[in-house]
Length: 531
Image (cartoon, rainbow, N blue to C red; front, side):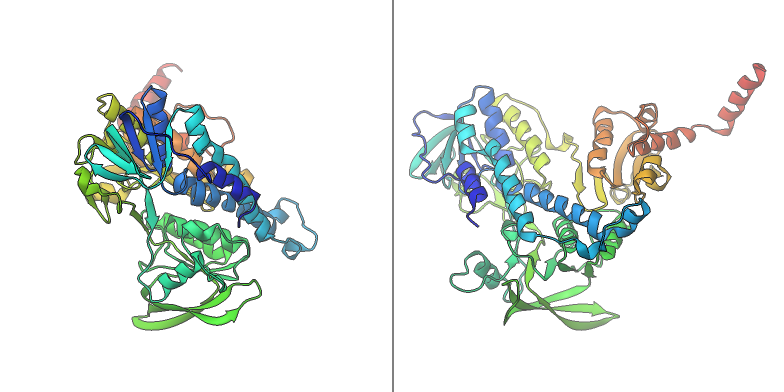
């Protein structure tokens, strides 16, 4: 809706009547794409004195600000509050807290939740605004689509911008399932005309909702799918998650993925993870009380060795089955930049494309589709493009987190990765059921799992599942980045009581393995001598 919050957002990230500067001299750096990677690249280069042009066709801030990290975490916050007072009555009662009337007395104002999301997004948006980048950072901002003219110039809105170096940071976009009827209903969602809007959405349109769906089907049990599924279920929408692989969160260890699935099922989410075919989706002609058109969503499933057809009557669909790089429409061939429609811009380890003067960063060229990864790729590109740097993508240690409840965060290599590389390793675990703070908080689900080299305390990878795992993983990331071993982490004093103590305690477990029978004998001898 074009309320005050969205108008403020648009004023910042795609201002009406924006006048492009007049291009005169050659730029030190031209950046195509104003998402996290492009903004960091432009700000960093301008900050060290480079003449920088930034080109953005849609919204400055990219997915993260407008339709990703910021709105999704705001929704998760509301869902956690709702769960605390509405869905977790047993925990409240155990703590001696009673809500008069019980869970039924707690109401959810979905429209206000979504309004808060728009308000928060608008409030943050000045940081990514055209005005700030122009007036405060000295970047020349062009609002339009950039296309390469040749290997050293780009055209935008009729102007030709010549450059010494360029960076492609155009991000990615959500892909739709090849399901009959889905593309057409998705197009009607974005441009309904005078017809009721069918809520067939990707993350790009999900946060435009103002009325709460009654039954949401989520296609894709990955990070976006499970985060939004849990949040919407906790807010009172019936949610069904669909997948093909028989499990959720395919990157995570099996037991950790099961822990997350068990919690979502406890929340009320239904999983159908043996889909063999997405048969089709059509409007039924019914309009529900919330104003949403009802849809018939048909799938084929494998059940007990048999193929079964299932019809789900829903009023909202979220497609979260993957993303593709934004690489089309830029005339990359004219610049000598090779690309692939699925993998994205072809880059070397220094993030340099097949044109030695053009670099790339972010989702359009990397498998690591995280804002923080794009941020640090951009920093590397500034050093490499402007200062003969030697920063390499392969040297980056990138943690990541899934913000379900409980959270799950990982860094480095999983056990299955180490097995595939035939790297011997040992695993040390400390469960939160044995952690005093977790016990006090009633949040005992989860653990710290750290994998180390078989012959030393070198940390090869780690996963934390539990409350605030996303914050806790940074300590292990720092240890890996600095070469600090697990045994040394045992000597780091943590405040008591904290869940982060579990990391230190995992270090204690490692150090106990050094107490061989011979070592124990020597220590007993030393004690005996002093008697």
